[in-house]
Image 1 (cartoon, rainbow, N blue to C red):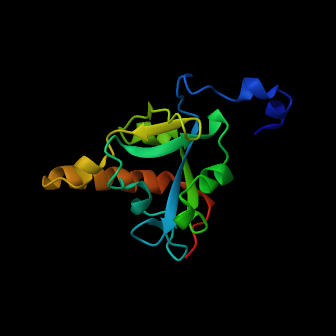
Image 2: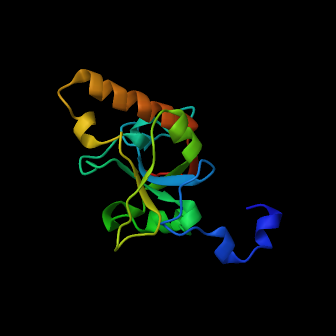
Image 3: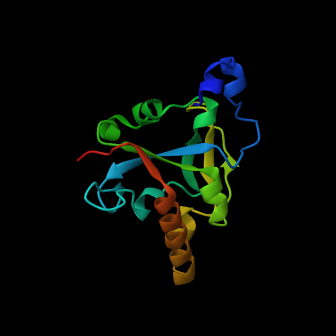
Length: 158
């Protein structure tokens, strides 16, 4: 947040879920430790393509949250299932990076979840697990592109 932003009333800084998603917005995603899951501190950079590969239940696209809707990294971490909460980390990237990769972000509010829930529909488990090698490879290439643009906000732990 810039010094000028700190002088604005909070309601002018935060966005509603229904507000348009803009290229300058930060998106966040929970990740786990390990090369398969997207984070390994000995790698350079430490955010790996696994961070943006769809999980089996992500049939509509990978799940992320808009920070502009008031979700902070620690809140996203704390909303993780209890069995992985202490180990998970949080990474972020700008919507602009998603759009540069040729993908788009779609709002998909979760009534019982954190505000600002979105998905990247092109990165879905149906395509990542397809028998069509071209679809699988396309998902992997997109995930790698996003991993290259990502920043670690909270490191995942063993």
